[in-house]
Structures are given as C-alpha cells and as structure tokens.
Amino acid sequence: MGGALVPLVTGIFLSFCVEQLLRPRLALGDRHAKAYAVHAGLWLLLFAFGLALWQRPYFASGLNVAGLLVIVLVSNAKFATLREPFLLSDFRFFKALLLHPRLYLPFFGVLPAIVCALAFVVFCFVAVQLEPSLLRQTGRSTFAFFCLAIAATGAAFLWLGTRIPGPITFDPVLDLKAFGILGSFVRYWQAEQASSPKDVATTLPNAFRLGPVTTEASNLPNIVAVQCESFFDVRRVYSDINPDVLKNFDALIKSSNRAGRLNVAAWGANTVRTEFAFLSGLPPSALGVHQFNPYRKLARHGVPTIASELKKHGYRTVCVHPFAAGFYDRDVVFPAMGFDEFIDVAAFSHADLSGPYVSDLAVAEKVAELCANATEPLFMFVITMENHGPLHQERIADGDEQRLYLTAPPKGFDELTIYLRHLQHTDAMLGKLHTMLSGLEHPGWLCAYGDHVPILPSVYSSSGFADGNTDYLIIGPVGHGAAVQRDLPPEELSMCLLRVAGFGDKKQNH
Image 1 (cartoon, one colour):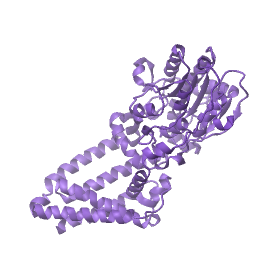
Image 2 (spheres, one colour):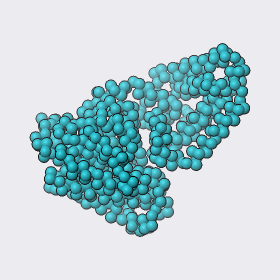
Image 3 (tube, one colour):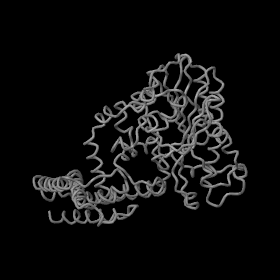
Image 4 (cartoon, rainbow, N blue to C red):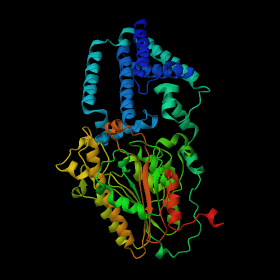
C-alpha cells in the first residue's frame, strides 16, 4: 500500500499548485487555517471514492487534479468576463452548457475545450491500460480497508475544518481568498444547509403591500415592464456613437416620469439577480447565500412579487421570454411567483430572429398583440434576448460602422459595433411599446431597464470603463408629471413603478 501513498500525497500537493492558477490569485497566508483541512479532507474523500471505483491510485489522483484544473480554468474564464469567480451554485451550468452551449462555450474557448477533452480521454486510456489494479495486487479485504481508512481520514479532516469555521461574507472574491476554491464550496454549502430555502421563502416580507385600489378593474391600466438584455447607455463608454442608435430612448427619457441609473449587482451576466430583485422588491442581503441564483432553490417555494400583488387586484400576469422556458427553471419558478402565463420561444418563428435570438421588435409585436386581445388588465414582464452574447460570434455587416458611428471606431471595437446593431433594435422596441401603450383606451405604463452591462472586455479595457450600472425609465400617459432623475437599486424600481402608476402602499395610505 506504500506505493499508493505516493500518488495520494503528490495529488494533494499538485491541487494546491493548481489553485495558484486562479484569478484573482490566492495568497496562501491569507487563508483561514481550517480551510487547509477542508481542502485536504475533500481531496482524500474524492481520492478514496475514485480509488474504490477504478482501483488505480495514480488514475484516481490524476482525475482529482484534472477535475480541479477544469474548475480553475472555468473560474478564470468567468472572472475575466464577469468579474466573479466560480461559485457552488454555478455547478448547475454544466448541465446548461450541454443544453445551450452557445451561451457559455465561446467564453471558455472552443479550441481549449476540445484540447482539454482530448487530453482527458488520452489520459484515461493510458492510465487504465498501464496502471495495474491495486485490488488484484492486495486482495479484496486489504483494498477495502485501505479505501475506508483514506475516506475516514478525509472525513476527520473535513469535520475539523468545518467546526466553528471562519465568517463568510458572501463577497465571492473575499470568500475565495479566505477559504480557497474547495473551501468556498463547502462554506456556501454549509450556508445553504443553515438557511433552508423553504424556511427563507416563507419568512421573506412582502415588499409591496398595496393599499385598496379604488379604480374599477376594467379601467386599470396595462403595465409592461421590460427587462432589456444587456441594455445601458453605451455612450458612457464611447461617445462617438450616432445619436440615432438611441433616439427613442433619448426622447422617452425627456418625457418619462422617472429615469436614472440602475445599480445592478451583476456584471455581464447573472440576469436572474437583477430580475428577482425587481420582481420581489428584495435586496440581495435579504437572501443570504441564495442571492447568487434565487431561482435555483429559493423562488420555487413561492415568494411575494409584484406579479402576485397585482394579481390580487384584478390583473392577469404574463411573462414573455423568447427563449427556452426551462432555462433558469423559469417554467417552474414563475408560476410559484404569481404569473398566470409564461410565453416562451415556442410562440415565435424563425422569421422573428435577429442574429441567433428572437428580435426585440418581434417581442414588441407579441406584446402589442397580447394587449390588443386582452379582456382584463395586464401586467406583462418581458425578458428580451436579442442583445445576449457572445457578441464575438457574430459578424459586422457592410455599412454597420458608417451607420452606427459618427467617425470610424478604433480597432478592436467589432463587438461594440455588433452590440450597437442590436441596441438600435432595442431602441425601436421601446418606441413601439410606448406608442402602443399610449394608444390604448386606458393608456398604459412602460418600465424598461437593463439587467447588466454587456460583455465587451476589449472595449472596457481600452476605455477604462468600470461602471456596471445600467439605465431605467418609467413612462406613462402624457401629463402625469415631469421626469424625476434618480438612481435606484433594482429592488426599489418595481415599487417606484407602482407608485407612479397610482398604486399607493398601505403605509402611505395610513
């Protein structure tokens, strides 16, 4: 058995070496002492499992190193684009990668993914062929005892490391530096076990608490809230953009009831963080560990939302999202949050595409159709897709640069050009929606906001841009008041929308 200890010890040493490839870089001295025990304990448990399954210690150790290396590489790719390391809740995206590879694989790199896959296959074949079975060499009872001894040692290390652990901040970068990648997984898992999503969901407050609505149901205005994918005033990054790109947005801002920056908690992705904050009216701090992906466990237990509140007052609540209904488990989560109907990509055709996704103008047509056929007041929550990356997978068309810029853009701005092409369609959608809502018998309200800034790493790098805030506006019937400029977090935007639309809360009414 002495020969099996060499790959075991070597593997643990290599695992700490692999961790040093992480970005941001980990300083071993900054880590909590017990985090080393957690790391070693997990390693030993995984090694014991792999050894029991494959009977080959070098192979089991190599699999551990390879698995950790993949996590580190994925984490680095995520940090480079989203400014956040890999989290425990991100493991669900390995399944999403298989179902929607275009959303994820290009950011990791297709060639690196192929090379890693081939290297892994070759390693598995060579290791299994060349390394003899330890079970055959030692006998069943000795082999079983050895595996159990390693597992017991790993469990003991893990127990010691998780007893009275260091404090967790829910700042992913700080927690990564304090606990290491494996230790941060364990601490976030502990936090999930300590705060049952069902218990958290049942204790979350209703952020809306609307007072009695005196208006007859038949006279209630339609309310359309549009979460525009990757939408923000990009002129904050690069000013030499043709004003026509955002001409409707500019006009709406001038006549809107409320407008300003939206202080979102996501950069480049993690749409559901902004989305859930808007729908629930709750800040991330109220969710604890569930703030990183509220739809993963928390929201499916039912949470009070703007939809469930308006439903009590006679509204039919509809979500329009031109993508797969099962993405982020929205098909399960949205009924639990008070939506009567979920309209997904199946309601659109191939002719509705602009690039790889359904166009924003096609979404506007769908919303107009629903409003025209409505027999009761509607609250529609719209989640667009057209601006979704990876933008570098698309190509610039002839005339794009001349049409979208005042002067030729710098070299390396191709992704910005593609983004502007789609952004102009978003702008047209906003104009169309406002015109449609204003023309109804009972003019409706439009709220539009961006979920996060787009992924434009080279553009941000060259311009030094570091402001992840997006933009929002609320606009209703003409004559409802002058625009008020105010920056908001997304959890306050939905209540702001209801107030300017005439729904006071109970506290105000008293």
